[in-house]
Length: 113
Image 1 (cartoon, rainbow, N blue to C red):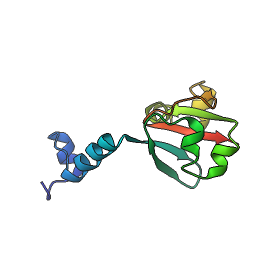
Image 2 (image 1 turned 90 degrees about the vertical axis):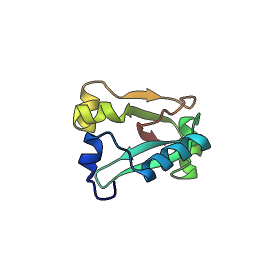
Image 3 (image 1 turned 180 degrees about the vertical axis):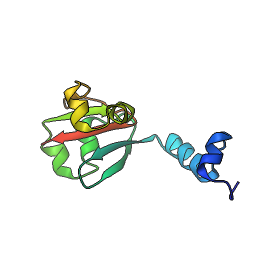
């Protein structure tokens, strides 16, 4: 398995041990990821399942929790299908969520503070 490329592993539906370990560990610990994206980088943030949008923002900086106004949210797959954040916005794929929004695994979030 160690000599197989990622493409070969995907074709044979083989998962690497480290990928499986990470996935199972996240599940056992009740963790998940959401994403932020911008012109410079796209980044994954790890949070507890069931976190509200302001709590998720605190993973970036405490100001994101304390000064939270709203969040623009889209699922990562919908964003990839749209091709860009601007196109997703034009197509109405972004949702505006408030303080009570429970973040879902794979959300792409733009915080408004």
